[in-house]
Length: 309
Ligand code: HSE
Image (tube, rainbow, N blue to C red; front, side, top):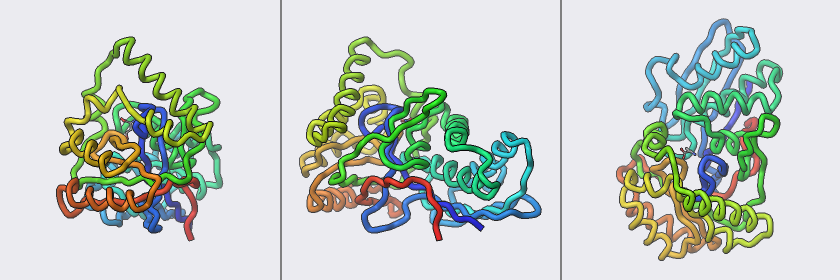
């Protein structure tokens, strides 16, 4: 029996739409991600547990886990039955890489129990393929960090899909999920097909400046360039009072604030734990729309998917 954990992630990190993503872990040690327990069996079985298992499809063949298993078997041209327990700890459509978590944990677990027929690049390609089918477009900025940890820059070259870039060890990432669902496929559909030359240049300038600041250890410069012109201007209306809240969070001392993935989760960054706690409290009081919502203060999760127990 093997148990695999895959952490939550922030896609886009306020800059680098579809090409930057960060794996996160709460500083209090809470497992913010999905867990898969797997063993070989007579036929395919799937049991769902966890706080958000009530959001999963009733028919297991519509579950991402089943999709991953059937795609994996097709890929290795062998049908190997397994029994799986999915512990769904992340809400679906939250902007925290919920589908990526299930995909990564499941594919890593299946690969392990089958004695690793796929190498990590083949596995990541398969993760991207499944994610693309679910969200309406292949994007690796959740699956790559959830699988490999850290902040990942998506190169998407056939030989190198993704590589880790340096991150600021003293940054606290505060995330707030308001308790409502937003479909990534829908949030991708509303984006324009074309952008002006000005926007393309600005976007390149901000991304390049952020990467430069990360490699030269200039934290304030990096935070300043965490701004996004491809998705945020169009998606901000999908989140409860996003622009007003962002302003308030910055006033509380955040050095950066943005939409996590396609939303509705908001993230904010501070280098100071006291400010991080203040922002966390404010978000709990003002951003959560019901009592399923949550706020966590996180670090970057440098490990990614891993065996537990
Ligand atoms: N880059 C993706 C998007 C992330 O913004 O659509 C989704 O979590």
